[in-house]
Image (cartoon, rainbow, N blue to C red; front, side):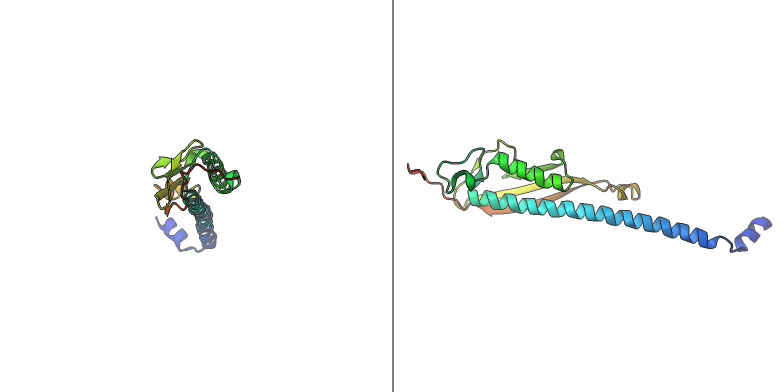
Length: 170
């Protein structure tokens, strides 16, 4: 017992222990900051995609799998549901989000390449986008911190008045 007490009083190697602890703390903090940046970027991407989807649905008063024949500008100005789905998929892929990790809803209906939601002038559209994400490094240090869901909710009103008269744009 006395031998152990003498070793504890001896200060040799204390700096090595302190340096080891400092390095472990530095690595944990660095991992947390990297995770925080990645998760923040995914939240930013979800917010940006939600705003884009809401703006487009509002301008078009809905989203259809085809271009309405009376829409001003025709296919140059109208974004179909398949085009929107592909644009959102590309946007999320650039943020490292796979197609199985995100979902978009318009008035509670899931956005697919064949989604058909038609509204009229001043009709309300509720937009919601959800993305699943994981804390890649920090989940190994803090138990229970694994998966989360980023959500963006937007409400918009339709800006396009559907013409029911029998006329066509050239």
